[in-house]
Length: 619
Image (cartoon, rainbow, N blue to C red):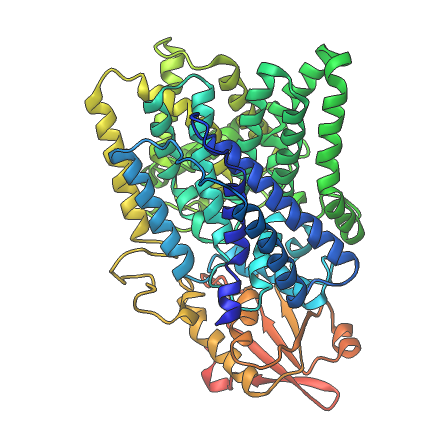
């Protein structure tokens, strides 16, 4: 129980760090978002610095993580105790819309705490790599059948490691994404204000992002889409301030935010590129005054990512190892057009996907972009796109927000709406860079969160410009109804019903790890129970490159006094060389089953034979 409570300490420290940066009462409005950014930067850089230093000395372990956060908390207590006054109440507008946003945040918080991590990518590589880091006491690359465990940008996993490293389980590990979601809402309101939007525009922009399905759904898992969105928005807000006064301190903070965005997700390279180019352009226009600032910002970005680059070069020979399939190496005008259309189609109403699928595919062929061309569509084409109502983590369309943005684009073309020109061009350039340089895949909707976040201030200003109050209210109602429906479905339901998906109100926590994958749940849990009864000392893993590894760590840690050594076996020779006591085999399924049922091999003499499950239990 003590370690479970300790696992929330890093997130409490973040909240208190933001509190430390709030100004003393002075009669002025509380600079809420500035405090959020400053506090988040200090907290995040503390994680980055301590993790990388500990990795050098093979010191990443439970005692170290507990010690650093207790020390951090003690410093915060000393600072806060010296404050003579409580910080002023932030100037947050009241009313129905603010209450609705608060209710969405509370529902997402309930889902984040009540459900264990249960997203496919989280099971496959986001959290397994954290468990290997904690076991190996270092962030250094390790042998793995799943390259994304060592190749993907690690910041979201470093955040998760602070909670998991306490040894109290994963009850609070989802809070990193949830706190980033809160930061996104504040950031969007701030940018809207910086662009000249009034109070109504700010609250509409905040509602736009609070009801964005791929934002509030991902607020209750340990993926990286919300974290990269927050850091990108923070960088953009700082950029807008820097354009006004060209303050070097602001550009330093810009570099820190971009560095952390890139360290969170590779898509930040292309999404943030237009804003980085604008900074470089301004610096070159006034080289005597600004070139040093720009150089320092670039150096900061490289420094933050340098440890990860070094580890990627060690493992793959490239600083971007493991991300090759996500890059379009030979973009053409045809691939740009098709990529743009396909990315937008991920957010059209699901009822339109099936009837128009052949038309869209034919259009791609006419332009010379074949869906069987793995350089353009490495993960498959429209045939794999969801054509039914689904609230999964990777397939929920942001179609209401997409309709608003499409309407805004039409209004701009017809000259009925004039957005802030420079910012609108930069957001459009971010989308263009995304479509030009990143390959499309059927599950890319969650990666679009950052693009919708950048467009949210424009959407807020656009909706405020509507003359029809009834139209505004109707759209608000649709936003809230769609959000309510999304909370009733998906992998982390916040509702009283338990129809097709498992609900935390009715299901044990172990079952919730496999919420959308019921076929695998009972065999996987039985396999872990079997292993725990054997008191294993070492377990080798033979996995296909998208298998569920994390539940083995999570469920086994609850049933054994001492965790066995767990490592990947990459070949038959590894069986002899590493000599594990047991081998867990998790293969690729056949037909409609994406996952094969788990199998355990035990050593008998000089070979391994299947010992679980008995043949009669196999399908």
